[in-house]
Length: 326
Length: 249
Ligand SMILES: [Zn+2]
Ligand SMILES: [Zn+2]
Image 1 (cartoon, chains in turn yellow, purple):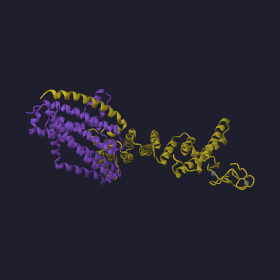
Image 2 (image 1 turned 180 degrees about the horizontal axis):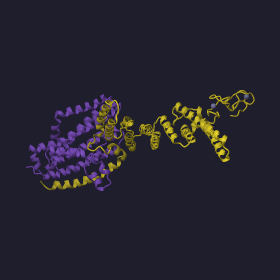
Image 3 (image 1 turned 180 degrees about the vertical axis):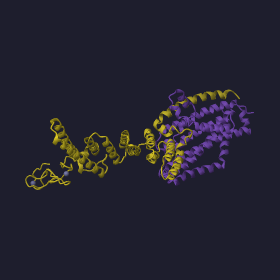
C-alpha cells in the first residue's frame, strides 16, 4: 500500500469537512428558527426524524383511551395531561390536540389545561383563534373566583379576537369580559361603539340602515346585537345622569353631568348614521313619526313638509318640492 | 492515472447482487400498501388521514432508504470474510477503489429504491389529495441525501468493524444525528462547533415542517443535499485512510 492514497484522502477530508461546516451553518440559518423549533419540538430526542409519523400513533392511541373514559376524573385527567403533552412534543403544530386536550381536562384541571394551551400559544406558529378562545373560556368559566384570572382571560381573548378568521362572537366575548372590569358604563359603551364601527368609516356613514361590510359586522345578527347594546347602555347612562342632575346643586358637577348626557346622545345618534333617535330608548325613528315605534315615547317629528304636511324621506317634498329640513 | 475499471466492477456486482434480492420488492410493495391504507384510518385518526398518509409516506421512505443504505456494512463485511476481491485490495489504490465501488453500488441501490417508493407515494398522495403534493419531493430529496450519508457512514464503520457492530453504530449515529438541534441552541462555542462537525441529520430532516405545511424553500433543501454529499466525501476519505491501515491478511 502506497502512502499516496491516504495523503490525498487527508487533504480531501479536511476540505470537505470545512465545506460541510460552512454549509451546515448556512442551512441552519436559512431555516426559519421558529419552524425548526416548532418542527423539532425540542423535547423529542431519539426519535430519529420520525416524530411526526409517531405522533399519529400517539394520537390514535389517545383517541382510543379517551373513548374508553366515560368521565374524566382527576386521576384520569393526570393521565390525559401526560399523553397530550407527549403528543404535542412529537407534533408541536397539532392544533386540534391542544384544543381537545384543553377541553378534556379543562373542567377537572383548569390550570393544567391552560398550561397546555400556553404551550401552543407560546409557540406562536398556530394562527388559530380557537386556542386562545378556549383558554379564555376556561379561565373565565373555571377560574373566575380569583379576579386575577379575569385579566388572564382578557389577555387570551384579545389574542383570539386579533386572530384571522375568528367569528364575531369571539369579539363579543372579548367585550363582555372587558365590560366586567370597565370602571363605568361609558367605557362599556365605548367598547360597543368601537366594535360596531369596527374601524370602518363607510359603515358609520351607512349607519343602522346600511349593510355591514367586512370587519366585525359579518352578519346581520351581530349588527343587531351591537346596536341593541349601544341603545340600552346609552339609555342607562343618560337616565342615571338625569336622575343625578335632579338632586345636584353644585354647578360644576351639573355641567359634567349635562356634558355626559349630550355626549352619550351624540355617540348614539352617530351610530345610527345621524338619524333622529328616541330620547328614551335610543333607537331611531322614521320621518313623520310622532311617537317612538319602539316604546311609544313622544318624539320630535321631522321630515314633514312645512307647506303641505307630506312626509318625505328626502330633502324636498315629493308633492310640492318645498325644501324639507332633515 | 486512476484506473476506475475496478471500481465500476465492484459497483456493478454490488448493486446487481442486492437488486436480485426478492424480499426487496416485497418490502417496496408493502410500503406502498401501508401508505395507501392510511385512507382507511379516517375514523381512527379523527379525520387526520391525509396527514397520516403524508407523514407515514415520509417515514417509510426513510425506512426503505435506511435499510438499503445499511446493506453496505453487511456487504463489505461479507466480502472481507469470504476473502473476495483480495487481488484488488492488494493493488495500489485498490482499497480506495474497492470502498468507492461499494459506496457507489449501494448509493445506486438507495437512489433506485427511494425513487421507486417516491413515485408510488406521490401517486397515492395525488389520489388522496386530488392534486400533486410537490413538496413531497423535498422530503424525498432530503431523505435521499441523508441516506447517501448513511451509506458513507456504513462504509466508514465497515472499514474497521464487522457487520453487526458496523450496522449498529451506523444506526446509533443516525439516531443521535437527529438530536443535535439542541447543540445549536446552546450558547457555548463548543456546542456550535460540534453541531457543525458531527454528522448532522437534523439539517436534512424537513419532515415535520413539510408535514405541517410550514413550507421549506428549495434553496435550503438543495443546500442540505449538497451538505450531505460533501459530508459523505469527508466520511469516505476517512474510511480510505482507516481502511488502508487495516490488516487484511
Ligand atoms: Zn323609544
Ligand atoms: Zn309639500
